[in-house]
Length: 331
Image 1 (cartoon, one colour):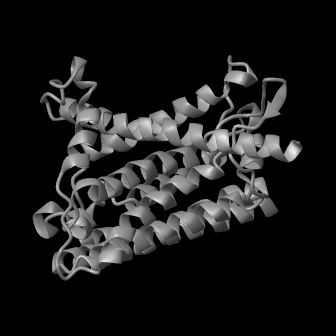
Image 2 (tube, one colour; image 1 turned 90 degrees about the vertical axis):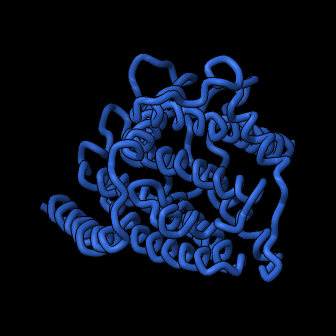
């Protein structure tokens, strides 16, 4: 009977997290367009529904009914599978992200984490790297030279920044002494957030994470002026929408992971344990807003500047942060 309860609980968590995430991603596109419109002194979407609230629904219907086009010389199986790899990889990240402390629900103690892995952080980096296969296969399978160039640029950029991204969280692991994300959050209780002890690592993480998901000012794989949309140039309709959803889902994921590793996760004052998830949502939302704000603020870098920043600046600084963290712990 306990196994049945466990399976039902796991299934409910997956359905709830997936449903909420899809709703968040849909309306995140509206929020981003509104914020960018405000920064650029113009109106955002405001025609479909009250203050444009139905715009994501209209966009979804439009994407669903657009004509599916597959290039004649494309590798059709890989062309179809590539966007699925990207969205599945990003959705899988949420399997180990702890949203809240354990709560009492219907007489049972329920953890608001789909699964509590001892190697949770290792799982995150392993699964996140799978998303690169979707981008590379999408650019290569379309049989378009601009798509292939975009895919190669994306792969080079994502690998470059993934190295520095991984090194930026080593300091947190040294302090916490565990790869388990739930335990990392629990050890930040009482206001001992890791960002206070690892401020430079937090900055490195945010920069590298934005670069890894190819968002402005690091969106060179999709540079419209040079590549006419890069690796996804041949995609249309729902397959293009899947790439689009994967990018926004990954944006929410990296902000949720930053909240978990550096900002104390669900910990915060005033709220009882049953409502601690609100702190997690607020912190993640602030980071997402920051990522939208920087998109409308900073100019796009050149490709050589991006690679130089990754290999010659962030990587050595991340290594130096590990060295000084270890030195302080020994002393």
